[in-house]
Length: 156
Image 1 (tube, rainbow, N blue to C red):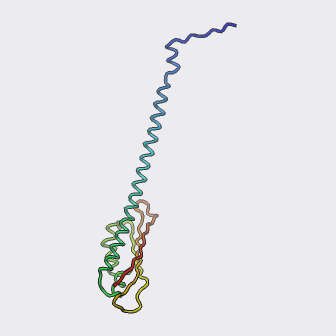
Image 2 (cartoon, rainbow, N blue to C red; image 1 turned 30 degrees about the vertical axis):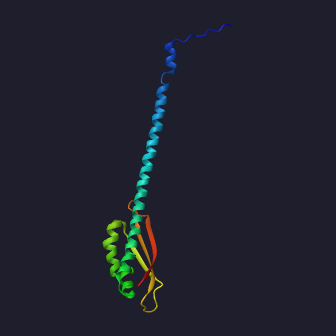
Image 3 (tube, rainbow, N blue to C red; image 1 turned 180 degrees about the vertical axis):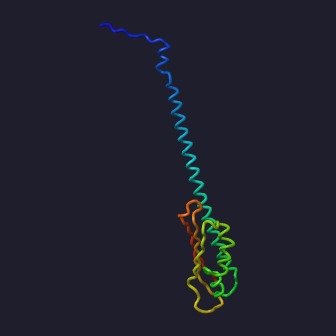
């Protein structure tokens, strides 16, 4: 049996491959677009994390400033404890003048201060420990609450 082969001319050869390059280009553009979308998502996540880290760094600086202010107070232990403890006049002033402006009043910041290992009697050099905790709400997600605590020695 004799088989007849149809001879392909150049025009029909082109029509078979016509569009193949277009599909390659479209797939390449799709992969490039997915890469760009992934990079944008990563950038957004990094910005959110940067804001959280900024808040934590501000809280660390606030606690260090708070403890330094207690050290620099120079009064007797009982006066320092009553003023700087949670609800004391120095504590309230520090929260309203330093904590709220830095962390933002909309984040509902609180500062809890607890004195431990307090001295039993009056002596020339007295020492105590103070635990300071700063808490604040996340700027974007109010249901998330952040916290930073530090315990420091105080010596008079």
